[in-house]
Length: 243
Image (cartoon, rainbow, N blue to C red):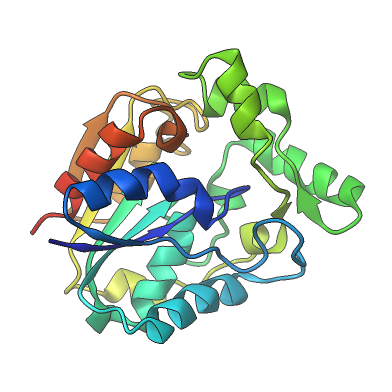
């Protein structure tokens, strides 16, 4: 049995892992899926990246979790990298699920394609609380293209605005890039076009290569495969997290 801590990405909260968690538990694992600060319904979006990281480390400490597989989806990759910096002795393995692995001194948005870099600040300025809501047209095709229209609309209704600050802050990842004792895996969904497939600078494999030595696990599915095929994702996370 393994212990999994699942960290969600932008526009999500911890409840969105529910189906994946159920399948992991059926496989015999223990699963925790905290909601990161500034995410979910009815909360302040006035948070920074440190607040996001602290919300996960506080959860881990309050639940006395050790020897766990720490999974980060999308933007959550930046969070798990910094959680590992703060508590490396507790993490058995890091698993990046179609996730950002920012260069040291860069922001997550710096690692995104230019179209997002231009769009997000405009949307945040229009929001009134410095948050970004992903347009449905982008969600439907780039993020959840393996869902039918009804499921795409249903899952879009579950999303909440994303605080901009944690996405644009320059991150000091010096400690993360010096860590040598935590093995890493990268889980790559082959139908994910949220980042340009094959882009040597902004694509997922460009992020994965920053991990140095890593285990690559692939599966069919979109960026939001946790909604469209949670059983398959659970089995791949189990494979990615094994010793």
